[in-house]
Length: 239
Image 1 (cartoon, rainbow, N blue to C red):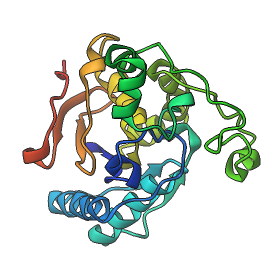
Image 2: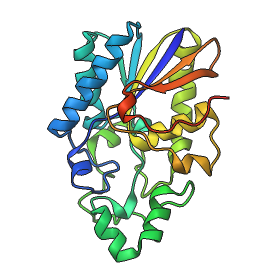
Image 3: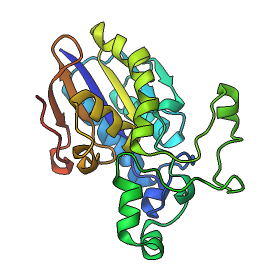
């Protein structure tokens, strides 16, 4: 049985403060570290062998993976990091408090920016302190940092990484762990379960709760479930 465990990073400081985070490199809270540790314990309890891991280039996802692997006694597993697994870029909303933004622009407009499939938020101001365009990690990789992203645009950058790096390993029978972010993982869920543009709007992935896919040959999942049943969210039906 080939498995793919998707872990949304544990609670970050800006999750706690209810702020739009995107590509800003915010770290975990103590609660987030505890969530990551529990994720590792849940994966360890499976008794399954994982072959490799993938994560973003943002510390909240990287640290979540570190903590989970430490709990699993699997810190030796190879880890690949890619900006393509970063959180969706929230553009001009980055750093803003979500409740205050709703009061300013209206809850309906903020809901469109947050949850619509193909409508990005306003672009980030190039002078913003949260503009990552000159961040050395992206300059080194030759990455053009987006000014804002919708979920659709996030999916478009996740797909090449999935097809080039993740899919070949799964096809070879390797079980993998992907520690990333709410929207980059929603993009993977949309891809794997062929979720419609409308239905993906209602998919929410809890922090620090592994979503386990099981495959029986090929890349079509036969089962998907959250390991922490008490904190599980609804999963689109596996056809």
